[in-house]
Length: 173
Image (cartoon, rainbow, N blue to C red):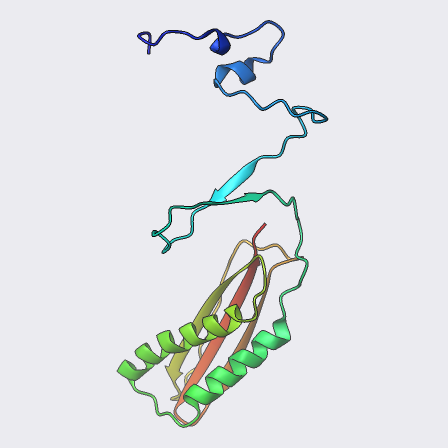
């Protein structure tokens, strides 16, 4: 590092804040703006798009709450429709239920994603089990914001199996 010649522009001037000169980065001088009012940007690199190495630059929104609430009733209708259509006439089998759990999760996730609810991350859980007179308790714990985060679930039963689907919607600022 000592091999590099020091430029006059990198020397610290008197009266400047120590953090401004210590990083070697200087902000642009924009008329009408103070150094406190300049907003920062963050870059998002979308996975799967490696052909054109372009980056999307987005401004901070400082949005603390959702513009559109998570539609619990619409998602409950999706859960009811998917579980009923996939499990209505089925008999419980171990190998089949393992594959069907993944399939139902993917279908529910895709249909909830089609609702295009901005800024919500969703978690989909599906349980399929055999009905032989037993009882089952399913519980979950998560870090939760009661004003914005929500969940919905639906259970389905036929003569040989039960299915329980739960969708958690977590607001992401």
